[in-house]
Length: 184
Picture (cartoon, rainbow, N blue to C red):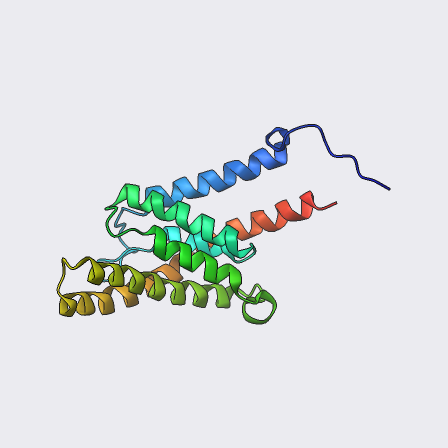
């Protein structure tokens, strides 16, 4: 039996509009939290990397190109909020691609602890790529970059993984319910 395609565009379905609102709203939430140093959310003057947490949450159940696209898009948003040189799009794009490329059945298995570990590892990777861009740019001394990388990468990884549940749990819950309702 052939299934007839609906003639209504995707944005007319209330569930799909709600999903688009959840995606845009959660990105705006990240954009609001990213530049702020809220007491209790800071470790060694480093706050959580909210865009990285969002990219990992998004990419965990998506295709590699979707993770890459989300990472690049959120990287450009982060560049707009901070300095555009060096770019955050490269590091977040790589993090999104690698997260979505993982064998989900073996490595992630949708376990909450493994998601925290994944955010921890990706935060280390993102900070290392960012430091590499600073080193290539030539404006910084390599010794200064190395000292700052050690402090920034570890504190960012710790604080980002600790605050991951605030964003990951509701988004993962919503996307599971949305996908269950969209599949016939």
